[in-house]
Length: 121
Image 1 (tube, helix red, strand yellow):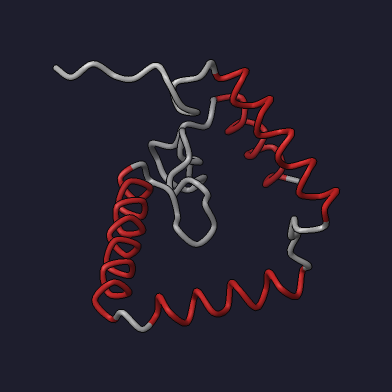
Image 2: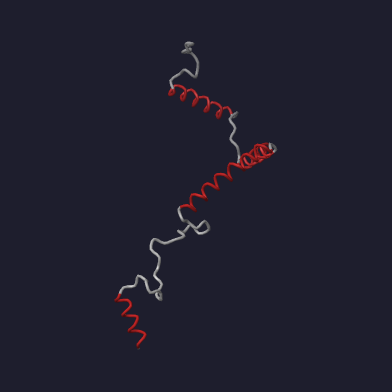
């Protein structure tokens, strides 16, 4: 295996690299050659890049395909957990509410007796 050189910026200690880079940044700002994007410049650059990327139809199709697959997988996972996809609420509660008129409802004898008393009045 080839021996790496101990010379150059990349072989320096990371702290030494930061120190040198910091000096270079300060010098560029002091000299006036450092550039900071204004919001309008950044917006224009982003628009230009977006237009360039969108020209590649195969790339855009791949992006759309991957997004659709991820969304479908997420929806399938939620559906398997019993979550309503429109409200993000569980489709089924832990314990279904008993139906009062059903003969096998889970109403207690006391609740049934109270109901009979109300009907007799």
